[in-house]
Each structure stands twice: as structure tokens, then as C-alpha cells.
Length: 379
Image 1 (cartoon, one colour):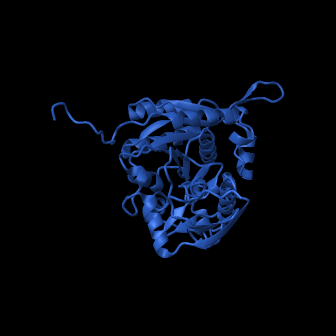
Image 2: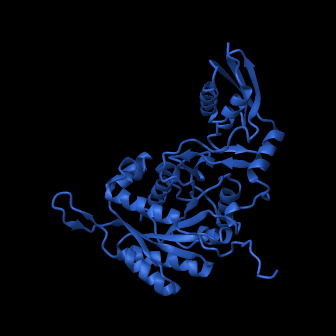
Image 3: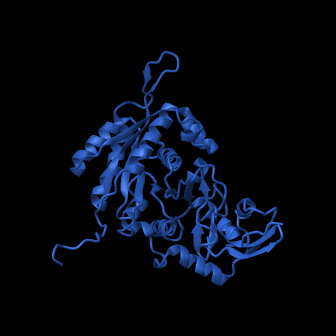
């Protein structure tokens, strides 16, 4: 009988990633023991918490990976739970030496694109745009996170069909994931569920946002999107304070009333020293399904109007990044937790969102605030 090479078993375990942390379980100290008996391999795995929602996924991944090793015919996976010291070590490992409660995206050396998606008023589809942008970016291979910063009107979990609650390890929150996007919201922390109102005043809103940024383990993200509440209130100001390098994307509809209010949301960036990266016009005109003539349900020209007024008011070029045609399936997909960019990527609305996602995810990051490892000549 062929003996099983232990080094191959270890290599197989090193290929197993924790589904929440996205790091090899061997790096996270999750492998308790490995025992080889003939053609059978017994692997004991430490879970981070006893109620780990990913226990079955971890078991399956270990079984498949170890089962692919030559000579292995049976794989037994035993689950145990980390003790307090092991969880504390895991937290230290993941934070990589960063100070407790620090916000990694606020570090001048962070290469993560941080976009605050804002609007002047509600009902313009800002959250739908945010969710679909995140999913489109993830589909393009980027590591994406979404903060549902609209504490009062949170909707990101529903738009992403996200039902798994976050896992908490030593005070560190592991965000759930849907369609390749990691997201955090106030919803799973409300005992009364979706119908329970959030009665927070300004300081508590600031604290909630700070916790979403500092206490959540996001990993190495390419892009972080913040779905801000409409207007120029506490969260918009706190975002600028906590994430000074964040850039603003203003969402409006074509109608003049929405555009005028959206300008005010964008102009706040002048006071908070943020860059407005551009304007998105949602619910734009679309061709009549019967005659093909354009239909402008919500007016025309609002996006360009906002871009022009912000360019003049901020004394910098603020482009119109895209116009997303009105499509009832965008709303239907949100109600069903199935983003349009995945269910029908060739539709005009989805195509516009996918193009916009590509533009934002690949936009070069400026060097403002980034330390350069160079010295003047002769030093």
C-alpha cells in the first residue's frame, strides 16, 4: 500500500482558505492536528467561534483538498473551537501590527480606492447603483467591500440578498459576503430586525461608522464603497473626517429638482476637502419597447447640469461619469437580491453600470498623502 506523504497533506491544507477571512487556514492557526492512518487522514480544525456559519464550507474545502492527495481514500474532519488566547492571536495576525481601532483605509499608504456614493435626496437609486457597482467590480476580479453607511435607511443587505450575519472574533467583525462583495450594515445588529427603527443622534452615527471601518476585518481591498444617506448631514461629514482620502460620487436623476439638491451634496466636498470624482445620472431616458422613440420619464439633462455646476462651484473639472437608462428590472433585481449586472449584464442599464464599475476600479490613485521612499540627490 502506498504511504501518504505528509508534506503533500500539509500543502493541501495550505490551499484551503477560510471563506470569511480569505487567508489559508494554515496561516490562521486553524489546523489543530493531522493524523495519517493507512489511506485515511484525520484533520482537526479550529473554528474561530462555536457558532461559525461557515463550518460546513470549511469541512467541505478541507475534505476536497486533502482528498486530492495521492493515496488518500478517506478524510475525516473534526471541528474544535479556538480558545480566547488563540482568538487574540488571530486578531493580532490579521491586523498585521496596526494599532487597535485604527482605520486601515485612512493610512496614507493605503492603496484602496474609497468612494463615498452620495445624493441630494432619497429615491434616486443611489443604493441600487452602489450595490450593482460593487458586484460588477467583484465580477471583474477586484476585491470589494461595501459599507452601508445609511444607518437609518439601510438597504444594502436586501439588495445583495445577504442573510448571513457577521461573525465576531475577539471584538473583530468578519463581514458576510455575497456575489464576491463583503458588506457590513446596521441591520444584523438590530434585535428587532428590519422594522426596528434606529434612534441615533449625531455622535452615535459617527461611532457606528467608525466601528464599521475600524472593527470590521476587510482584508486587502481594491475598492471600498460607502453607501451614504442622502444630503449633507452627520454621516457625510464623519466620512470626510474618518476617511480623508475618500472621493465622492454624486448620484442624481435627470429631473431638475433632484439635480439642484444633488449639487448641494457635491458642494459639501469643497468644505470637507474631498475630491468629487464625478456624477452619475440614474433613471435616464430609454427607448420605447413598442416604437423605439426615446422616453424621458424623469426629465432630461440633470446629470450634466450637476456636473457643470459642481465644476464651476468647485473650480475643478467634475465629469459626468455615466447615464444609466431606466430599467424596471434594476428595481426588481434589488427586491429579489439579484443584481442586474449579473442577471442580465447585456441590458443597457447593466452595461452602463459595468462600464462605470470598470472606470472607477481602474482609476489611478493620486499620490497625495502617500509617503515616497525617495531621498533628494546627494543625501
